[in-house]
Image 1: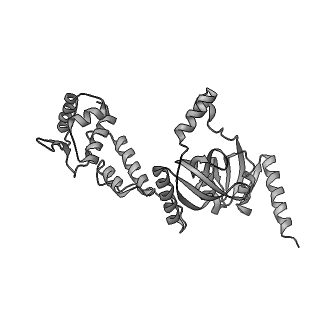
Image 2 (image 1 turned 60 degrees about the vertical axis):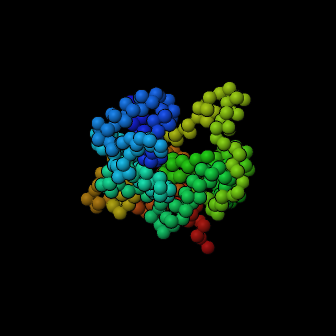
Image 3 (image 1 turned 90 degrees about the vertical axis):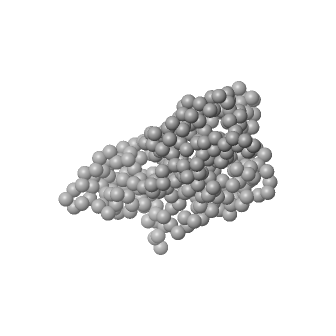
Length: 311
């Protein structure tokens, strides 16, 4: 029996409180005799599983059980702890958290996961997660105002499929009625999110099945992974008080701190139109040395900003 089967077997018992050997055999596609062998193996490993005979009997597990180190490696335990903490951060159902918490020792307080921003609006992020999660699970459409890249706000009606964390942001993946296609919506740009009473009739499975049937292509061919932007090496001089901020934003290949505490840095940045705007946000604390093209673009952008403030 594989570790994932052990894990699921124990989880089912924690979830159902009690199950017959026949029910478990049907669930795992094995014989009743195999189920009893699994029970014996788990008991030998120290898992408090016991059998109840007679009407209403079956296989049960102690409710005070916490998964023992003999079953899970340290890596497995870390993965479970991370999952439990992430569920808690995203506002998972309390009963679900309690069930998962049984799978790890109670001293797992060394890790905390919080996807909310540092700003006071953190509670609003959790409320948004709860609304979207509930809409996905209940298969209900959601409507919201969405601010696109051009700054325009549009009312969107979406059949939600999943929540996705990509890069440094959360997205809602689903079918957009207005766009008539699959779209990803950045959560930070969504406002006035409401779950409607209308059923989400366009599922992800049916959408892909229709596409695959018509185009005879694989899902990978239809929706290939987004190409990563070309990266460029930028050399700059940054003031002492902004070194850490630059390191938070970019992969710094080289950092040489001088006597004045400022630093000569070389970092990788995406070669995209918005990069100069971001670099300019450091103000006089960042001076681009090379490449010349980026340096000139930053200067030109600074001059355009300056012209806006001239009388």
